[in-house]
Image 1 (cartoon, rainbow, N blue to C red):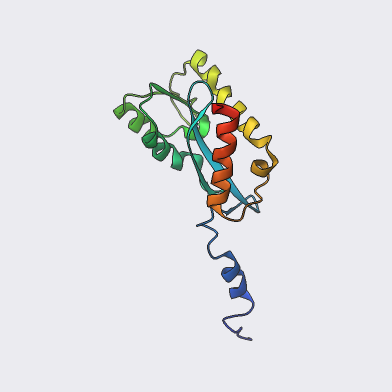
Image 2 (cartoon, rainbow, N blue to C red):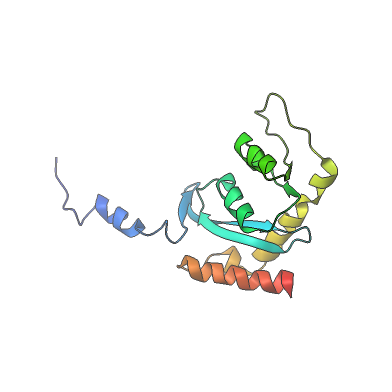
Length: 160
């Protein structure tokens, strides 16, 4: 068996990937991606957002984003956010959870369908963000530059 020098071969890949977490780049479904997590108001205007590597679950950023935002009455979210820990936290904060139960739940939570029908507001926000090619295809290597572009585009499409 031939032993490789520390600066060659297998360690080269590790050296190239260094700093990927700091720049919010992760491997998801075989590709290097980033994920934008956004909290929007009822008009579809972004209130808080963050950037994580693509292999981070959506629910991990729910509570940090909610803590940044002003108090809200309800949270509309998809099935990916159906977890007892998040529902318990929302209950302690007196926030109504409008989240459909996942198929794995034995006893599903009741869902306010009228309120849930407004969830398309956040989907439309992401569609408007992704209309900007710089956001849809992350050209920026640095996460700070990419977040600045997201903030600028968000201000243009939603607040101006």
